Image (cartoon, rainbow, N blue to C red; front, side, top):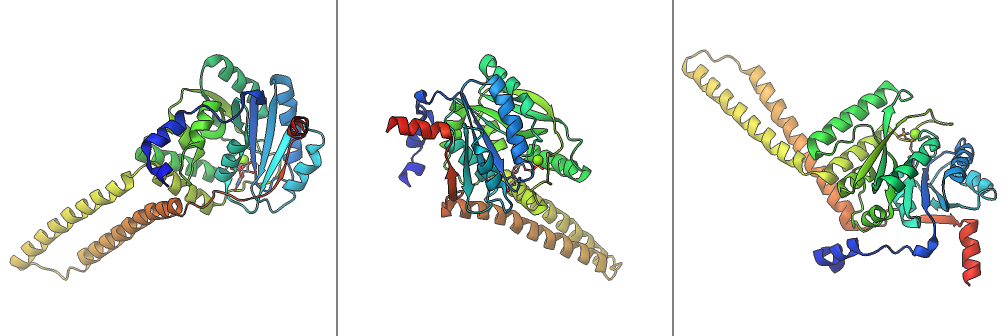
Length: 342
Ligand code: UDP
Ligand code: MG
């Protein structure tokens, strides 16, 4: 606990050199969060390894099975024999994409880590460009931006637009077109892993670190198979935690709303007094209804926003692990290494 509270300790933790041994010699670690991707994961890994063999020195790929309820795990185990650099982690249940990314970052040993979706919507063909930009451009983060979302429904596009607008207004982070398809230098990964918080929003956190960033652009491809795994309830939850984790502005907004309401109520009171004095008072039903509705909903809204922050604090304070691992498949490369070490 003192570790978390002492700012000196935390600063030294963040600037500490990486825990990953230089000798790992892995240039790129690829993290693939996957939830119910049984239909397409084998084809995706085939594609991914094809690209990696062509452009990368030593690499590793880690699939994080986020508690899939289909045969994703089985499919990954089936193809492992063909890909010596492939390892996998399986969660006990669905903990969400953010947790899966975190597990992948913790597992990775590369000098750079690339996060990519398992459904083929993030084209692996872009990987050589990621590597070139990172190797030559001196940037610590290479982030791919969605140029076109033509394969998304209008509903998905409209919600993404609304979310980005609110996020920009409230937190100042511009996430328009941002995706989780990004490459992070080891320094960025180590900085992210030193964050003590439980509630995470990968995209926002990497922007927050402030490391130098280069952007690539890509067209969102159609899924190889299956449908999106996000329910609208999950998306709303992600949006609320993304906002409440980055800004306390909504709390200030409620306060201002309260002030405006008070001013409006005062004006109405003046008007009511005048009508009464001038003997032109009418039944007052409409204004009463408006006042009651306005303050009733403003109250509920305020409690809702407070509740969202309280829930965030509650989650942090419980300090439960972000995920639980059920099983792991080690890559043949690391198994060979540990048997030669021992
Ligand atoms: N995913 C995950 N856990 C979840 C939901 C999704 O690991 O609870 C993975 C999913 O398998 C995919 C990536 O996150 O690799 C993006 O998910 P999806 O394609 O459903 O989202 P979208 O492309 O619509 O953003
Ligand atoms: Mg997708």
